[in-house]
Image (cartoon, rainbow, N blue to C red):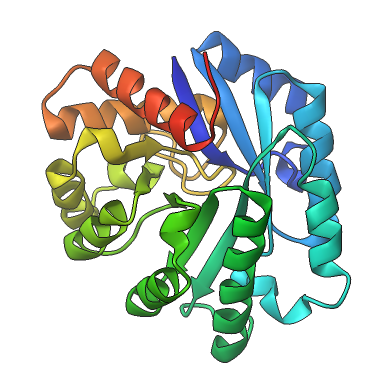
Amino acid sequence: MLIDSHAHLEMPEFKRDLNEVIQRAKESGVGYIFTVGTEKKDWKRALEIANSYPSVYAILGVHPHRAKEIDDQTYPTLRELCRDGKVKAYGEIGLDFYRNLSPREVQIKRFREQVGVAKELGLPIVVHDREAHQETLEVLRSERAEECGGIIHCFSGDYEMARSCIDMGFFISIPGSITFKNAEGFREIAKRLPLESLLVETDAPFLTPEPFRGKRNEPVYVRYTAQKLAEIKKVSFEKVAEATSANALRVYRLKF
């Protein structure tokens, strides 16, 4: 079995053929998909999808791009929605200093707050970090995020950051970009990290792996990320599938 630990099935790209997308994933051995609602307009849709398919679970939170939109109703609404048993994590939350769609100081403030909300709810967090590696670590440490644990989604930091996150009890999630021709540095980092701390994800509809780069990504393609990871680590595909699935089940607190 494989698990796509992070996708966005609630996005418009999947409106036309969602049933087929989920069926293709199931037929290829993807046992579970975790769909991530990152802003107010997507939360109920993500939860609706999760409650419509036994193999789909939801993750809800406010993406750093939307941090400036948080208001007095945001956290009460999320607290209520996250009580649904199909919600298995809080996120994706964090920092994005690449696009800076919300002011940096607002992103940091809201990241801190949302770690607190996740701890209150008893949920692991899914962390978005883009070109804000040191600041992300500072927030995780100062907010004692190891108390809730979680995942560094779509990892883009260096080996030292990965080790620091693993030492705090976080898992490192490997996206399809590991298959890209210019990702040699990332592949070297993945090679050095313990399989017991890794997940695989698509981030669908984004980051489509080779040989499908340029097309819409979807959960069925998580296989290509797992295959590349097996190649890098010189282990069998089956071992990667087994380990990353067990890790996903552990962090999301699910049982076979």
